Length: 235
Image (cartoon, rainbow, N blue to C red; front, side, top):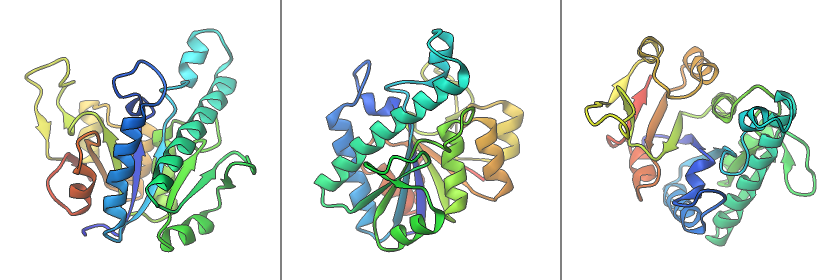
């Protein structure tokens, strides 16, 4: 395997499958199977998952539900729901997991402590990070970059429904071309929507490469960890 320790970033929307809202059990099962494949090869895996399938902070603001800080906290709680669902799917597959939250919720998860997270990984447990960074105004992309740097991961894997980074949105522009590899500077210059700027900058400053790939295609996660040409590498 090319990588020893990776951080997998999943969007909340990816859990919806073909639904308009919530969690598709089939998608959860597929993700659990893919993660088990990689874990069985000896790779240490951490996961950050978004909450957009349940509640997004920015939607709460635009809908007049709450101010930005309050709405972002609501979004963080949504990520914990998704993290618990993923934890359940993994444990059904016999995978030992630990859910660590940036917001204290002792009844359902451990508080995030960097050294504890790293010990769990070393013992072969899948570590799921919930509640983003624990602070409003930061996305789960930024949380993924931060946690990856903290746990000394080799790579951030951004699992999406698209098979890499394109010159334009491939779902809207049929002439969009995919990059096999791209630099951080080129991402800035082209204004590509890979992750938010805070997340990208954090990775660049800490020499943390990012791989964007299609997580919904079975076996892709394993192929990436084997070093095969899947998706787009930002480095």
